[in-house]
Length: 442
Length: 175
Image (cartoon, rainbow over all chains, first blue to last red; front, top):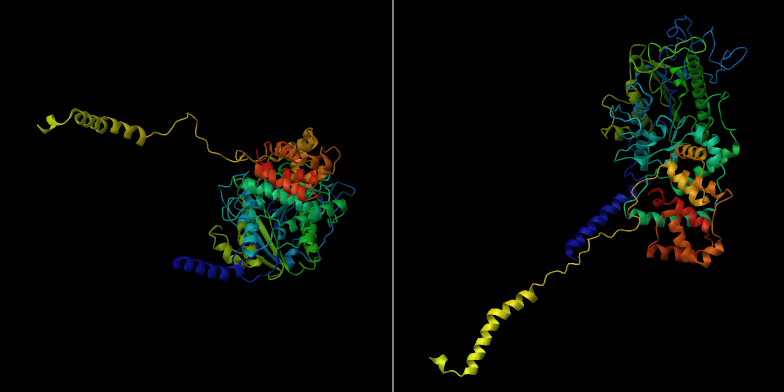
């Protein structure tokens, strides 16, 4: 070997010897530098377009139907007395919806944590709003049936925390509205290899899933699955030589086996899972399966989206009912987190609607002759955020009606701060210039 | 003149040498030294592997429909096709959900598979048939050799596992 070549190779080998010990399994070079406030974060993308008036405003029918009845129908999340007249949002008793669902939590999320009473939603639509929550950005160039343009908090978590795929989950309320696209972005520096495991339990464990996925044959891991994978990898290598690749979120074979076992076990339970006491809509079922995901995988990050409130486009009574159930779902979720030893006392939960709803109704009336509401005007920019868990001040209210503090894009850097990699995320330059961690707004 | 005194034979030889120098030598140089490339009137072709022309990713519905037809040799109903594609969309790891779907199909009656004995009696034919069925092409010699060796050295490998690996392969997801 020539002298110059020898020196080059020796230098490269020395540099490699220094660098290799710091390469984590995820591929990141160095561990996250910030201190963690908690090991787990759960974010609820709350409900599918929530009017400020009926939620934090507690105006019930007063500022929507011209009926002077106020009250709080979200009493797991918010402090306030419920309405006393025209109760339509509960379960059926003598009349449809006349029996409110009992409160789950001994003290409300508001008492246990911090309420940002009015924050700004930059999007009037579901997909844009959810993308703002996940990306920490408000890209108006984002297409509806297009993967997120900027990295999501899932990718930040996997890349900068070094979390494996099975520790990052996105549980969707279904597969409509491009929901399955949101588990990773098309950003070239992030993308599929840092994506979250996505699950839409109402489909996976619904009639479709039972018919097409529940009867999976069990193959022996060494004697049967190993040969299958070996032959597949040979075929894949040949195909990769001509540029053929498939995007994958990089679950290891062990993680895949864990997820397959998880699916099999849940099919075996036949729906007897950790659902809330009342389970009469899709959101409540989705939350039940989210709890099962958390019990099995103890994810660093779990995001769940609820959407039944969007019934408000044509059914105001159904909207109230769904809002009441979304509160029930959040109460159940927080309650169940405290039952999981690895997550109890070590989890921060954030709850934010992706967008609000209009100030004025559309002409559609429901069974009670109440008007429905779409989401497109300035009132849709009025939402709220709740935060609860370790390091979160309790019983604190920030901002007020008409005094917006914070925005929906704040959730992404907030999660990054909780998990200890805020500087990495802010340093990418891909976060909205106005977005900040909510801890910086307290 | 000295030249006029030379014998006739020498004069003739001198003339032949000039003829060679000025006529034949240049002729030989141009015909031998500058031989042109032969042109056979055949188009130039870039040689690529047989799977190189598969550049389009199948949709979920295409993948399921073709998979079902390959395994059962019959078409899937449109209702089942729609439901199965929803199932694929409901799980984020596509490799994983494909695996679960295939193993469900393998558990159903009606999958058309050669027996283990048939495969081992004619491994060559089995390999060709499997490539044709799943990848719509013939195997290359290297591929044929790999699978031949693999099947012969792994007595626990049966046609179902080979079919499974083809249905799970990346190439199978393209057309």
